[in-house]
Length: 161
Length: 125
Image (cartoon, rainbow over all chains, first blue to last red; front, side):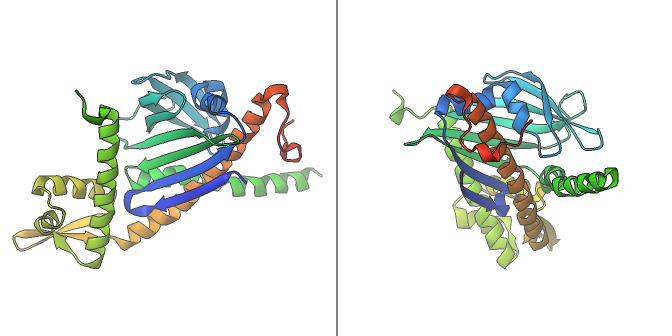
């Protein structure tokens, strides 16, 4: 079991997620730094992400889009606000148009990632703070579609059989 | 000389942490009883403007509402929003659980020799 701790703080719309991996800190850092690795896990289950741009430096911008089960696209962007390779990363994450250009009217989420070496690997702590309930709602809704899609896939399999 | 070498980033982080603690406490207070900003400001030994700023952040997040009563504006808690937030955070937690599983797969592929730690969990083609 790699998930060590989860703390949900509704008063500040914050989720703290602590997990441990059997890999050195430098290697875990790469799943954030390398856009090809990052896009494999960043999107919610049925919304794979594609990073079009990933400027992994302080002040750098990333642009990505996530593709939903019906082929619909949701754009997103990051702005990196702090980097201490390979131990700390902070960024703002927001919704964008399909082209990944930030929508200035939409609030942003602030993410803080900390990587620490443990005896056998790396402890990763991510703290995500949402600005509004709507932001959180939008992301959570994407995550909820997983169960539905699985069910639909089973129906398809039955019909095809 | 910089005392204890706190970088602007670190100062920022500490400030953010304190802001979170204050906001959490404001929410708890006004859930018990609606209060004016000046009453809250006395509690935290903070300027009216500073508390107003925290309340504005909470109001944007729909966790509190402001209602005028006479000359004063009272800050009310919003228990429905708080419950909704708790529910949504639980959903978001599931997204993170999924993410961590996939990260584990990627790290297993990256490991020297590419030996996955849990071969039975590997379902990729």
